[in-house]
Image (cartoon, rainbow, N blue to C red; front, side, top):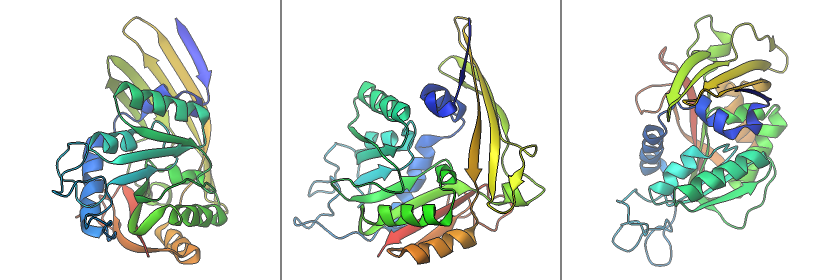
Length: 289
């Protein structure tokens, strides 16, 4: 049986499959190591940072000490894989996305794994939750859906209101070299196998033109997934994508107020700088003032 669907963000399982090349546990370990280095949150009334840890420094979820950070909000979360992994490590986790399908899928996946995950269907530029978090994250270049400077500044201001003083906001974006350099830092075609499903994925490429004024591409993507029972599912879409430079992001941080830049990285380690030829991501670690 062959089934075709259009709109990758309406097919969360296919989207998660397309992104299964990512090593989410390793990336979460990197996130937590950056938190250990850069988090400056204040302690709660019991003298322990208000992070879900008991007085011995052990997480109330029974996990090993993960440092001061104990709560996380993932923005434009999609399937919320990073939030779910952080929840599995003992953090109090929440996820926010504009897509109802993605929110429902993330909630189902968390429930199936026995994880507590608060899921919110909302716009990452304008939302209001009833709590603050030690850490906010936006992964997988999901900031590409912020198309204008006003959008980016609005996002930064909304997140500022939801992060504790001294807390962090980590933004992982595509490296601008993928758009401005003749040498690509990432591949736009790959084959992935996960849970017995084999998928061929194409996402963007040199043939997709860039609007030089707005820095927006219309990235053509397709995924063909082959299941063990012979079922084949395909999805195709055209996804608008704004790429950002470090200069623009730095300016947006200054315009928005509330955050300062604590660190930048070109990969999920501490040694790759944005300027390195091996850098394939543009990661900003912002700290709440």
